[in-house]
Amino acid sequence: LPDLAEAQIERGAFDDARAILDEAIELATASAEARLRARATLVIYQLRFSVAGSVGEIDSAVADTRDAMAEFERVGDIAGMARAWRLLTVIEGTAGRYDTAAEAAAQVVALAARVGDTRLAARGAISYAYATLHGSTPVDEALRRSQAYLDHVRTDRNAEAIVLGVLAQLQAMEGRFEQARVNAQRSREIVAELGASVTAASTSLEASRVERLAGNMEGAERALRQDYAVLERIGETYFRSTVAALLGDALWQLGDREEGLSFARIAAELADDDDVLSQVVWRTVEARSLAAAGRSVEAVALARQAVELAAGTVDIELHADALVALSEVFWLAGQEEQQGPPLREALELYERKGDIVLAAIARERLAALSSGQVV
Image (cartoon, rainbow, N blue to C red; front, side):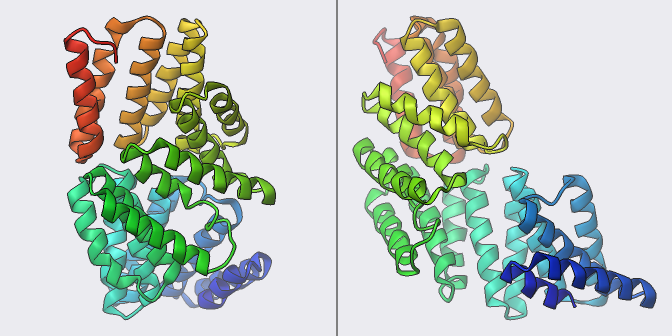
């Protein structure tokens, strides 16, 4: 029954899935089948996430998932354990607990490979790559494991495209721009070959990061603008909020402050409250605009708010980026003496992550500050 419910979820037949799961729970209760109840519990949370984009109360969901995992382990159900770890990956990743999500994803790949479930192993590989990109896992380790996991996604083209996009960003952090661009381009090609989709119109999120790290802000702007036009045309909002925020920032960096601010405000309007990336980036663009307009108190307050939001996650790259933006706001506000502390903190975070490129830039800015130059 849980397998049948999963199939209904894949089809989008959520009411049918719910009815099947109710039957499964009733049967498990009547027969005292703990394993059936555990399996149904996982699918119930899968259904909740599919319908609402959330599993509900996080701690309760984690506890239920671990209880199910313990039951699968008791009866030696390796496939069940892999599915439980997969759900835990989704729960922790959605909550922004990327380091915990990465650990869970590694378990998914290992267990799914043992039972020959290539599809589940591919999903675990995707989750691992994404979680290590955004978590505190050092770049070199994230690269090593994600490259090894490519073998698990070769039969799933969508998964291969996602992992290649992550690899591209990690390689760019190490300054390996030629390899990064090859992987970013291959990722976009695979997605395009799979047909028009929202995913195909959001690959600029990865490609633009590669170009930013390579110092090619014009290339980042072109990729983001192209995807934004497609997403706007089809009325999509989830990815469009992030694309708009990043496009606003790219335009600001290129000197088009008016249009940059307009895209930042679109992002502010579209972004969900829990979309931390979009919420941070639009605030940094708005803060710089306020500072340039002489509204320094509001500017600094908004930039600090962006830093606080980023610091509330384990995404240390986003945290460091927000700190750099705060330093820029201080400069625009005529408070050059305040630039040092956020830059030094950003440098420490970039170094901890292993982002060689952005660490070098932060180091150069600090050196310029110490010599009295304007940065």
